[in-house]
Image 1 (cartoon, helix red, strand yellow):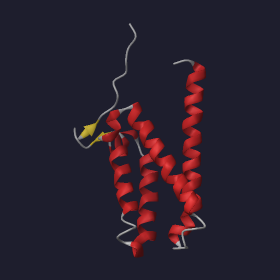
Image 2: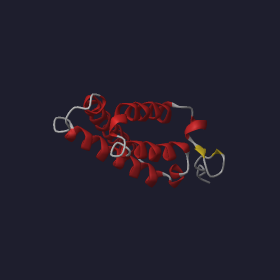
Image 3: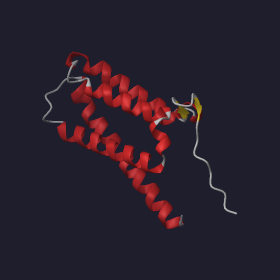
Image 4: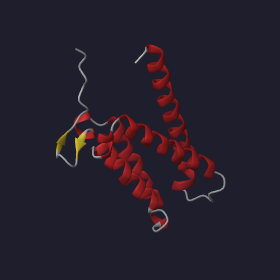
Length: 131
């Protein structure tokens, strides 16, 4: 990969993540304090849209993401967010759980993030050796 392409890809991923975090931050008060959705719904949509785009990017980079803990826990987070519909009185606790899980997924050790629930051990992409 050329250096230019690397930087474009890197800055695009960083920009997408920044928009995702902004959406989450701005929607947080609405979710946590159960404010009527209109003032913050666009921020929520931004967070969900950028989250899906980041998931697609991860899956396109490596299908292993789907069986690694970082991917599996992302789907668990989506399930917790979906449970807002069935458990509206628990939104604040569910949301806080999702935020805490997000920190572990993003900043946990590679051995945790790359752990495969299928293989029951850490699984990484094989590096291609030029030769």
